[in-house]
Image 1 (cartoon, rainbow, N blue to C red):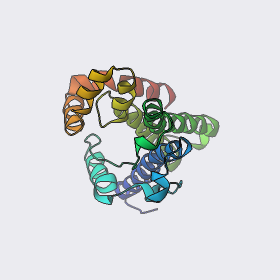
Image 2: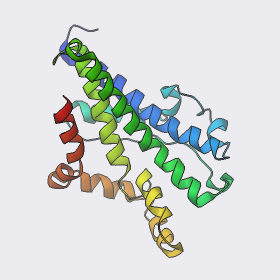
Image 3: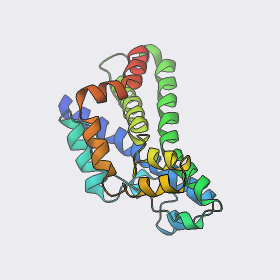
Length: 208
């Protein structure tokens, strides 16, 4: 690893980000494929290789890492191409595909909490082990909560969409073009962000 601790931290953060967002998108891709949509496979997304999902690289990796490095929030995007018309049960299956990405993040957070607890004294504060494990838990918890905001095009928007009537879905779909802007503005209000991300902060405080 580089001798400069700032570069080391950036490399660890970058690795954690690539794994977290890449596997999130892989969750979408495999679930869509399982439910009858060949689109992810046709676009080369049916893989656990995280780099295959991080397109375009500037918005999926470089921009988010810049904001994370300077202490800002998550501002970036990666997406898995799907065709809901190919699903066997479009309304239900769109919900399942949307939920799969955040579910992967939650499972990853749980897995790396387990690894941290198993390592015990082999992951002391300030060590590379501790830094990487904390980054994986923190990023995956934040990605889970951020993506579950019930505003399209975030995953939570498609989850929320399932429970609405026809008119409600039409209204929600009309927000898709600018919904991400609304979500980012809301979560950049300090008091709103502090409350919304509180479960992640509390869990991290208990574990680390």
